[in-house]
Image (cartoon, rainbow, N blue to C red; front, side, top):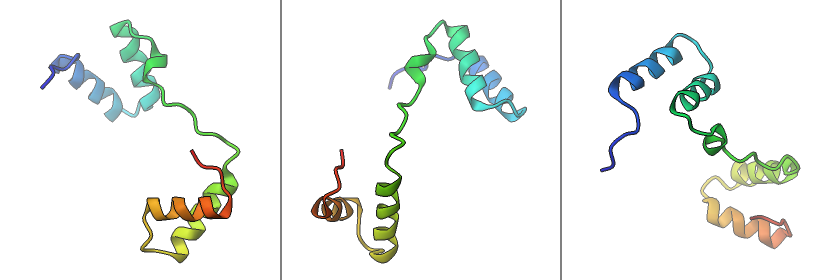
Length: 85
């Protein structure tokens, strides 16, 4: 198993900041600044905003077809003509 980049003291300090009510984004920003790591390497890629209709359809399928998994929902969406990644 790979050793952690953080020492036990650093982990405790980060957890204490989170417990004190500091937003997670700010805790991560400070940790990256201390470690001299670019913060962009720890950001998630934003989801596409124009997929509200697709998300609504997925929810509708999941509500009606409760036992369907993600693979079967994907097949139904493709059959209906939705473009999914």
